[in-house]
Amino acid sequence: MKGTAGGKLILCGEHAVVYGHPAIAIPVDMHTTVEYEPRQGALVVEHDLWSPRDEDRLDEALSKLFPDGGAHLKIESDLPIGVGLGSSAALSVAVARAMGATTDDDIAAKAMEMERVFHGDPSGLDVAVAMKGETLWFIKGKPIRTIPSPPCAIVAIDSGTSGDTAQMVQRVKDGGAAAEEIIDDIGALVHAARGVIEDPRLLGELLSENHRHLRKLGVSTPTLDQIVDLCLAAKAYGAKLSGSGGGGVVLALVDDPEPVLRSAEAAGFEGWTVRSRD
Image 1 (cartoon, rainbow, N blue to C red):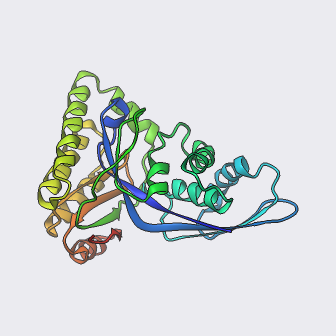
Image 2 (cartoon, rainbow, N blue to C red):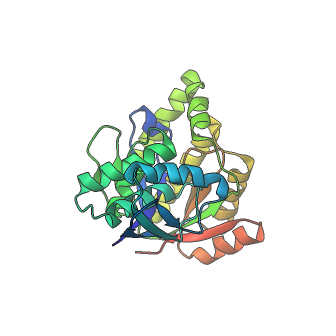
């Protein structure tokens, strides 16, 4: 049996979503596929994705669904690991589907068992995008809604560093009243972004503004700022860090991915076209 699921990017709203504001997340055109075959004995996993350092957590996550072994799993993916593209959620949903889960409730329940190992107390947003493969409007504790996708290509540029989500969340929390004001500004910006999501130029301006807010919160880095600047210089509609910050990726809305990808490569960064023009 086989299951497939895709990754995600946070378009806008990170950190503010923790405080009850909305976030918009988009699916990416990169996927994980899992082949599952029942077998006698211990769990056998074939992959070339996770480093030896991360394999213990992968094994722990899979043990939630296969506590007694009895399975041979083959994992293939073009999603990079640990850069904010939702690789663990894609894996978790793909495993659930390979096991034969078909309803949203069953897939989500199985996938969240694995996601708790990877992320502690996940919101469920990554799993929802991996399941549905659609752009989602998300407010914690409320029904998730599907909204239109931006009608342009999107690239992701890897900063080459990873941030600590818990540390970044605590940094915002420690920011006091000044951070609260910025969080409210981000929340208002997400509502504005929803209204112009089908206009790449206006949406791009809002995403670049979102990055400036995140920089004020102290969750950006000089490298992320450098990547945002090179994307804008290469004529992206807009660019921002995506995720909790401290590292990870920058996303950029573009008409043509190639100028941004060439600029990133020239500066020593790896990038991918994660969503083609609709």
